[in-house]
Image (tube, rainbow, N blue to C red):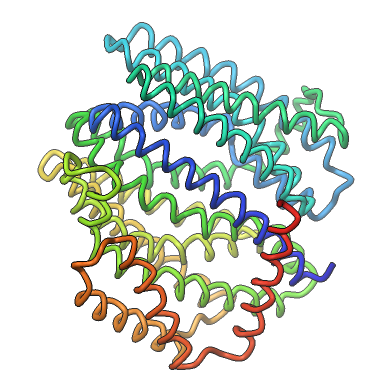
Length: 481
């Protein structure tokens, strides 16, 4: 299979499965908000953000090593996987014990106690599922991880919604998520055991080499977490869970958008990593095209969401979450930078510039913490939202400057002006139909935007690729059905 077809197939698989998974995940978030209110959503967000902090140490960026190195040399696969399992098992048990001790002895809120412990067990199981998914993705076999994730989401949806309506209990709901994650782990284990031995290896010398290689990715993951999740923890500890719930209602809404650059990163990283070794010219062409497509996709979403934020919040969560409107209007602008940042970060990883990427993320993380510490006590969740946007903008400037100077010139040509004009025409048109239901406004807006792009003119190669992607998507859908 050609490189282009491989990327299209992988992207189609990931798009189909992760879109479904993301929709199911968001249904669960809405179910929490509707049944447990803003306080319940705040407690849920805090429990998983807090547990994730500690499990950053366990993941240690090792899954990226699988994606990159195993993609380049499949002979290393089994040894890599078994040693990484050994590392994560050892660290995971330690972290699981620490979180359980903290939750039980240093938190007097019974709901949060159980929620934190269950969330920690979910994180523990997920670290091994992540290893197996990374292995399949390094082999361009996206279907196995997609199937297991889909099963996990279906179990979580059916049992989770039932438990929420029946018990109105956050700990019971998170217990259901623990069961669904365990089912995903079992399915992946069955798949991978047919291919390689997954018994853990405890080779300390190998661990040191892997840790040294993964260290930049660990820093990247840690700094990324600080930028995107530390505000949730700080809001919960410095303000209250109600405000945390408002903020995360908006955050969870835009978080579903991140599936798009996220799945592109997974689909592209193995191929980009190979191209860096085999064909740097083709790598540059691929990067510029993806950068252009990402900008084309995200700009109209940002502008439309800014205009329709209150409609989205009231439609999805209800009027009790009115405080989430301003958060959504501000946070959506972080997505404009985030989408482009993820593609640029993916490029830096693929060309072995992960150390530079980690430095940029570190600067952003420090910037984020300082602003949050200063302004959250003064302006609460609004400060957290603006800080996220400023941090994303800073990271964009730093990565854009470095890539332009050292690897490839990203020039904003006429194409980008066409995208901006199309998006502005769309927003101007939407102002005249705000009286319509939101479910009618959104498709009308998307249609106007696409028509404007066609009128202003797409490039020939873009039209060809778009048609190929549609054909590939249809083929994948038929196979799933």
